[in-house]
Amino acid sequence: MSFELAPAGDFLMAELADGVRFFGRRSEKFKTVNLGGFIHRPLTRETVTATALAAQLLKRGCRGYPSTPALTRRTEELFGAGLDSYVMKFGESQSVGLSLGVVDQTYLPEGAPDVLGDVLDLFFRVMTDPVTEDGGFRRDYFDQERDNLRRRIEGVINDKQRYARYRCLQEMCPDEGYGLLELGRLEDLPDLQPSGVYDAYRRMLSDRPIDLVAVGVTDPAELADRLAGLVPRGTAPRPAIRATGAAPPPRQPREVVEEQDVKQGKLVMGYRTGIIQGDPAYPALLGYNGVLGGFVHSKLFQNVRERAGLAYYAHSLVNGAKGFVVIESGVEPANYERAREIIDHQLAAIRQGDISDYEFESTRKALHNVIRQGEDDPSEMIAVKLAEVRTGRFKTVEERLREVAAVTREDIIEVARRVTPDTIYFLRGRRKGGDGR
Image 1: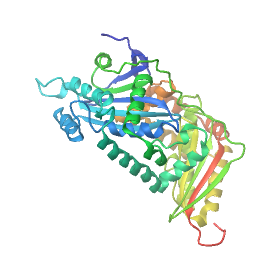
Image 2: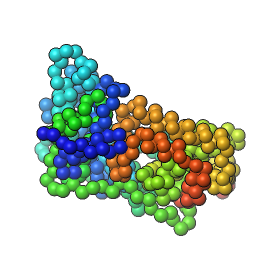
Image 3: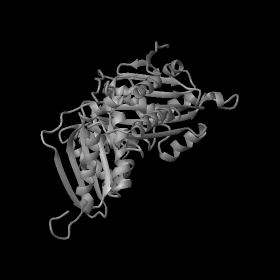
Image 4: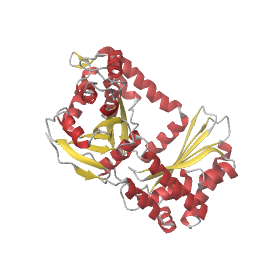
């Protein structure tokens, strides 16, 4: 079997079956073949927890290797191949992901067996043929992984910086799938059953889009041929998943204050821009974030943390799937108002064109380095390509570098004028009395 591969940025693309796409890139930098397999579905309240649990159950074993120790022994036999499963979200989609890393055949001893073929077979066994009993996931594995998932969700709640970010995004997206935690909801866990979760996963395999993204020495055409005979065949059309989409901001910004037993306050400020990954203005949004709070030379780091000494940390980040800019800062409740005042001043300064040569040039260099450094990590290369796959807009590394280099101060100022406040979330310690902050 031979496929005609079309260019998709630095990768080559082929459709292996209905709704099953392959993206491959040959790179002589690495001595390995790295493969990511992603099954996508809309991110919904009804399915989020079962999908997350299914992802954890895949790593417990498969046909022929029905336990974690047996699966581990098999990967060790295959020259230390790495195999894992997990759940992730991007915008309005949730994905079950599997990752594979194995030494390329070129670097194995002469006469070594076809390791890549054996590893790919194992990869798809894990994806399509997990351990079951009585028409569902094996009960003892199911109970153990349900408890593990509960602890992981509780871990987010206990990690107050991560929890505050999640709560801000939840408040920003009350009617959008992105407001859900990709790990699911604690209240769903008691009602989940092995057969129901297994049936839901089988439906995903048969009617949801699947993307396979590979980086390594092996020629993409050869990989496409090998994968074509292994990918799951669907029983119904696999509709495309709309992962991205910028929603309009609320008419009035919201302020949410939550009290818990915490020693340090967590301030998270969410803004909408209407600019998502792939938009012509997206490189300028990255430049805006770099000047605002993306790097150590940025306004937030220098003015909120270093000069004013009001925050344990102060930075910003961009969510390309939703077009969000999120500012995070660790502040004492007594410094809340002052910290907000200084943060607002930095936002206003950029809108008014107050961007120094140092801030501008340092941001351009930092963004250039981030893109270049991503080329040294196959996992990062796969992650970047997967984000492009979900937006449907493919670029080469050189194109991304040129776009960043072409961003001007005026472009950043124009983006700054599109940044609209949505939600201000503050997690603080419980008050002992009075109503002051």
